[in-house]
Length: 310
Ligand code: RIB
Image (cartoon, rainbow, N blue to C red):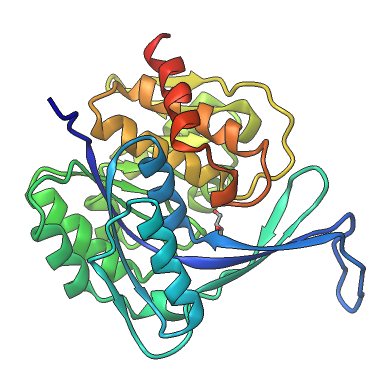
């Protein structure tokens, strides 16, 4: 009998990543010579879609691309991986791009220029969610207008579909978006942006404070220290990340979110979904690039087995 794949929908962004690897990051007014350059597929939404797909989910991508060559290659990239592109629209103008600088220790700096991502509409998102029978999880981020994510999540909520918001890059959250999010998953920087006193997630009590304030399920990614999430009893639980040699952290947070969404859609416990997220994120920082750093479907199966076998 054919195995049924969990279905994940991403209502989110696509970008073409323009990644420069450099020993030195320039100060204002300074020019430096970099080491290498790579063009790759990125965008937080697209990355999360790809991670979920590599683990074996059926994935629908909802996005708007420009009518440029970046739009064409982005569609081809999704199709070559078996990601459903029937809900992607095209508009006149430029697709999203993201110039990225990566230092030798793997730290990145990113500027996103959303382009066509900003042309997504609430109607497009709502009808995408309403039009599919089998979705288990809908994921959103902040590289498209919040109104669009609110429409997607509201439609999902009405149908009992789990919604996961990755509030990245940080922007003040619309109250309506918080109310229709089942899970909110920031990284440490986004956490500090959301915390009323700007605190980083340095203790369970600080994490609990923000979690309580948001009033939904909550997890925070902590880089090499793994992740913490608020369990059903309101207690903060921690998940360790495997120790690895990081060479490029770009897209690691997206690997966590895509894998976590796959885990929830597959019926894994919160703990196991968070473990899978940490394993996939740690694995991704050992390779260069964004989607190019993600495991192949076979490698992803082995990572999944690590969680399933305890
Ligand atoms: O999270 C990494 C991603 O952020 C990159 O792929 C870049 O496109 C930006 O969206």
